Length: 275
Image 1 (spheres, helix red, strand yellow):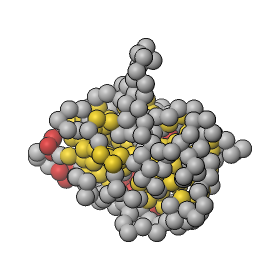
Image 2: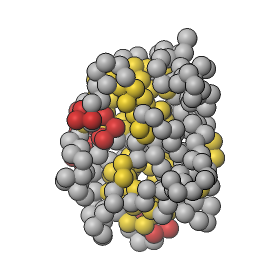
Image 3: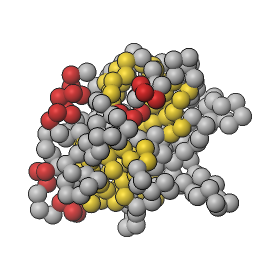
Image 4: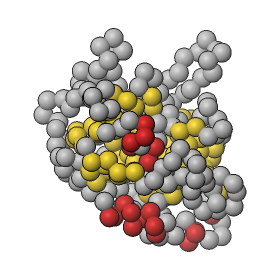
């Protein structure tokens, strides 16, 4: 069972396992998405590669799901003060507005959302799960995410099973079964963790289009609901080279392996650069 890991409207779904707060990647943002009437629809994660170009997952900006506009927050704790009663974070304005003084500095709006062709997994394993959002207000940061060279993963060669990746996003940290009395855990902060490579070209889930990583055990962490579109960086916390966007998991409780849609493929890079 494939599960998108965006975040639905009424849920409060981060990085799972052994995570830390992410202050190393200020270009990773929390994106809130809206219907035509302005109603909040869902949330995802994503990353800036320039002051105005924000990359995320295709299913996050899928017009078929009713998405027509977005607002992106770049505060590390963008939703940490969310009040379930009022439905708003009074500090950042998430998810309905940009807080005073943050528009164009730590928050931006957009009505230009582009989908690479995501079709709800009909074309699996080439899900076309990439999206681009062009911000109305440029966000000036000391650094941005870096697109990879084409075929970067293939260039890893021997020993690639030892390759580490860093994942970052604003999603759920612990998702529990509906049959338990325990509660889901979401800190609503930008968190990061390390994952290790499983595969990107040899099984039915990857086949050259998706990156499969392991987020369990050995001080590793994975992704869950709300992390969709966030970056999968090649290397440790100091890396800014992004090889995939967080896309889906096979387990509804976000256990086991995680999958990202590869952006180190020439056709995907060409599409992102053409927006």
